[in-house]
Length: 204
Image 1 (cartoon, helix red, strand yellow):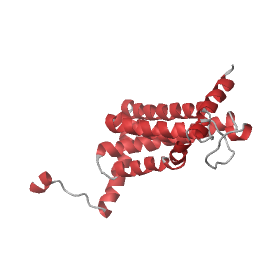
Image 2: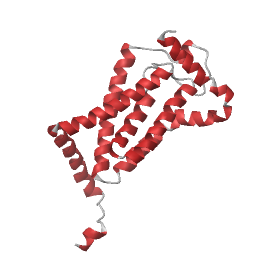
Image 3: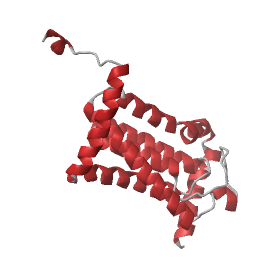
Image 4: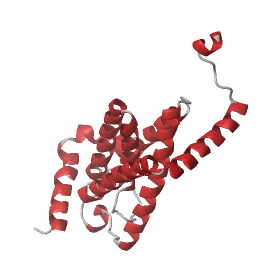
């Protein structure tokens, strides 16, 4: 079998679980359609802890997501691939436009954020990566992506997160500008929302 046949074979194995393990279908629909919002909420919560390490982590995640999704747009244009439900009889559990299947933007978004968190917070990151994997798997189960779509998306997301972090580690100029933007934001934020003093700083 060539690659496309292997890919479709694995797609069928996973997608057919929708007929044998029907009790899990609502869970898979939930992961496939709504779990991405947990990542958005997580990013907001980390940001508004107002800790420098968390703000740097969130900033890197956002930059990496922009890079990864921009690259995904180019790939989907030059290597266009129909969705499984367009070319095959599948068990489609969620509605979806018949647009480009490769790579999976859901997998990219989930893995770029999860990896960005993992690079700073290993314990938290493992949980986020597990959730990202559930999202990727559910996109196959529900019939809207091939396995290679989500694997490519996961790779692109993880690679972008690592590369962005390495950029700021290796380039003092890039890091300087990055931190300056955060400081500019915090200067404005402090005028609207005063940061509470810790007990130790209040004693001083």
